[in-house]
Length: 255
Image (cartoon, rainbow, N blue to C red):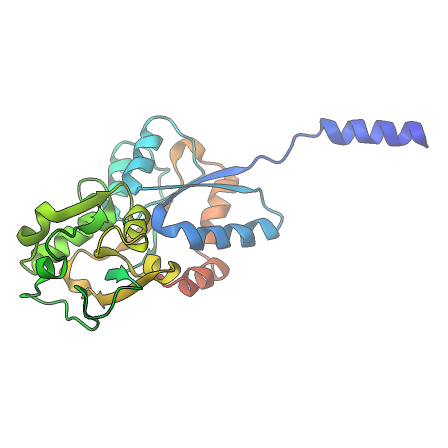
């Protein structure tokens, strides 16, 4: 019996470990994707290793040879960029989620202090005045971060961009912009509604009307370098009812 157990242990040890799968996801998906990963793994599927960053940074990592199983971008532009370079497996791209922009302030700031509650996001809004004499507006870097690009579009549509363009605190991703607000380092920030809902110490001052910017859509796809049956199964799971329910619970719109 002892010899049998030793042989069995050796055979088990020799079996290849089930490979984990790498997912590249926009920073704004952090909380939702962590919960979705638990559902996936609870079904006996491989462990998901989640890499969160700005969509631009993730797309460039794919371009440098990274072999992720799924790439989830926070805008169409960076998925287009990856697709033009042949980085996306043909026929796998799907728009799964939507979001909205909101203006946020530190929650412990008095309502009358720079960011009065219930402001209307409309032309003529004195956003620069709400920042105070030296305050800055936290947003994702408009040059590379989708949330920042959407914020620039929205402010430009309102005629407000010129008044705040030199008073920005540009961040490497939307969660970094949110953190500046949480810490009270800036009086105001523009982030996704889902980020604001997930954060402590942040109050939503107002929501931006969606027509002020391009629609905020999250395309998901299987990168060509990581294209496997398991990767395609994961993408189907992310588009399925169980994952969609989690995304909705975190405030995303499912498409």
